[in-house]
Each structure stands twice: as structure tokens, then as C-alpha cells.
Image 1 (tube, rainbow, N blue to C red):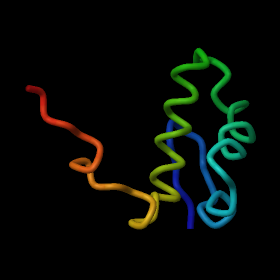
Image 2: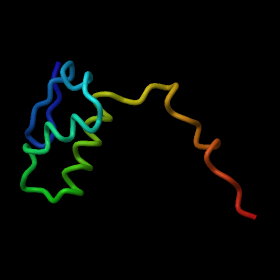
Image 3: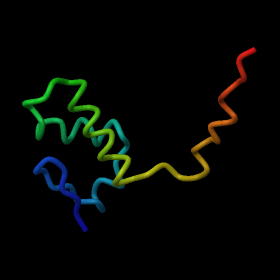
Length: 69
């Protein structure tokens, strides 16, 4: 199975075995026309689509928010 983003195809099976940092480093050459911030954002979003965080690793937002007084 594959995923195509901005004209670049990604192998879902291969990418799922990578850490986010490995994925971004390996694929950054495909987006050389972008500045670093935009390229990292596109690749980070793509990584999330391919390998979403597990439910165990995601805390409820209410656990991290405190009420302003």
C-alpha cells in the first residue's frame, strides 16, 4: 500500500518501521524546494498519517490543561 503527498509516493509498510526522525531525514530530499520549516511540517504530517500514535501514547488533553483563575 502506498500514500502520495505533493507528488511523492511513500511506501506505508517501509515507513511504519521508521522513527519520525528517520522518516524526515530519509525523505527531506524529495522536498528541496521548500524551506526547512515547511518541509519538516509536511513530512511530520505525512508520518502521522502513515503511523498514527498509539492510543496508549496519547494523553487526554484534559490531563495537560489547567484552568485559569
